[in-house]
Image (cartoon, rainbow, N blue to C red; front, side, top):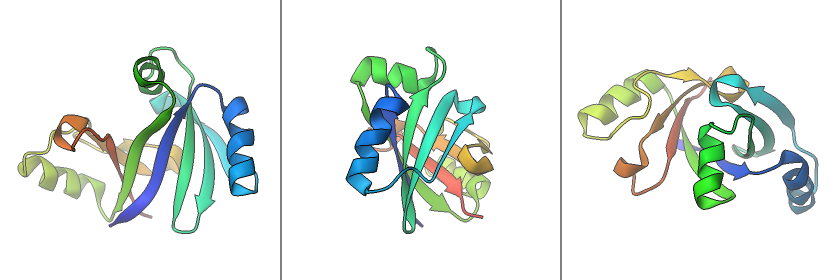
Length: 131
């Protein structure tokens, strides 16, 4: 298992991108819309992990609600696992509360699932299946 990425909720990609481009010394590696998550994502690859900037595309999206309640900032931590579906079953059996009982499509068409922060010390954890 390893840290796959950190998701950062931003009000505006156009405002946040120049800040991270200056910080990291280069432009984002990719940008895409993830319709299922109702976000636009800008990705900065950093060796074996990455930073994802998340801009809501719908005022009712989880990222929009997060920003309304807590402001911009770290939204989630993503852990890479070999098999998301199998890991979800193991975690649920161990008493971890799941947001997603089955994997779904995330950025880059990767298989993802979220764990509820009430079971993970207040941190929204995403699991992603490594290709």
